[in-house]
Length: 135
Image 1 (cartoon, one colour):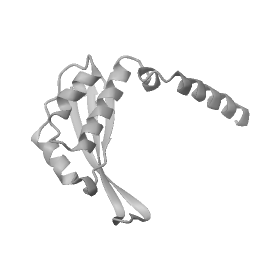
Image 2 (image 1 turned 120 degrees about the vertical axis):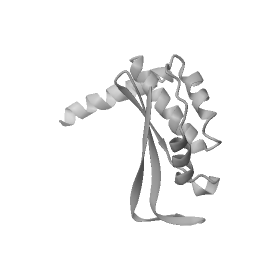
Image 3 (image 1 turned 90 degrees about the horizontal axis):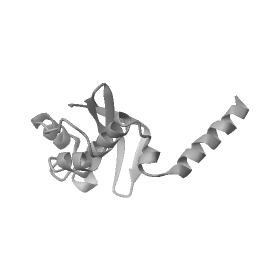
Image 4 (image 1 turned 180 degrees about the vertical axis):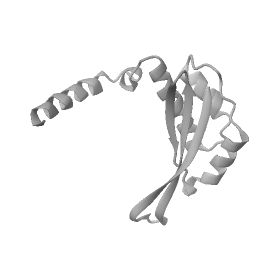
């Protein structure tokens, strides 16, 4: 199991602001978990409002996260990693996303099946059939 990550800056076309602040850009961290040729992806979008900072996430990742070799149960796998994220929720969510994405790929399970969202599958088929009319 391999972990990689990179920082990406989203430049806002127009400053985005709410009552507490305004931003011209947002820095996010992409997390990649690779196993057996499959890549699970997650995204950490830290927020200053919650005392989360990109540099803190990079520091934790640079110091190393112990990644289990197998991902038999995505919840247990994710819990093991989350305990190393020092309470930074956006980083915890990024690992949760990446591990679930990877597990679903390895087990040939679409996410909607994992979450038992059969209605989503029906909606996807409906949209696809409607698009065929327009194409």
